[in-house]
Image (cartoon, rainbow, N blue to C red; front, top):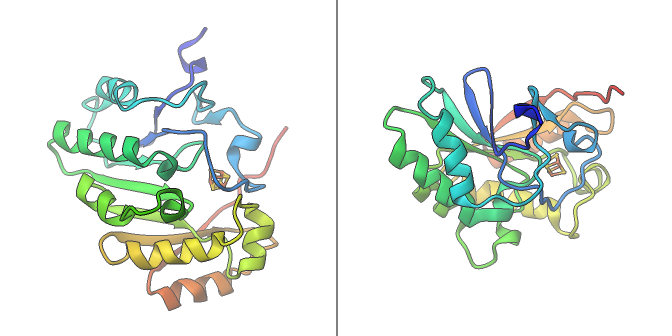
Length: 209
Ligand code: SF4
């Protein structure tokens, strides 16, 4: 089996490291890359199992000192806060083992508080060394969100808004939406403005068979 055929928890694009720590997700977005790709940048991201902290840090230790990375992003074929303790453990490990300045970011669907009841997710992320969260707002209203993200629970859009409000108290926050015909980007921008956070448009990568 070629090296890049083996599913990876650690991959990189340009000068940024990415961590693929789970396949689980509380959304089922029709535009999700995992629906029609095995991975990105030549890396296979279709995990066979949910990796442990030590599996991830073993992979990380092979590449962490390979170059001066600009940052590390928790972003893969699942929602990182599905495995909050693994996320926190890996973030703490990076802070212990990489002495140079490095931004740690989590790309999240914003369901972290629903997934981890009783936990202060944003505060725990901050304490572990995470600097920033990029939250997939994805829509300017609940109906559109439910249609395009197909979440597994009914109050998902409200959960995202709640996550943004809590995260911005302790972390750098940006929200994003994919450029799709179904999405009114001006409306999504207005929601971001009302929440007092930055808004970014992600370009849709269409499906090529
Ligand atoms: S939230 Fe992200 S990982 Fe989950 S289905 Fe949507 S695009 Fe995929």
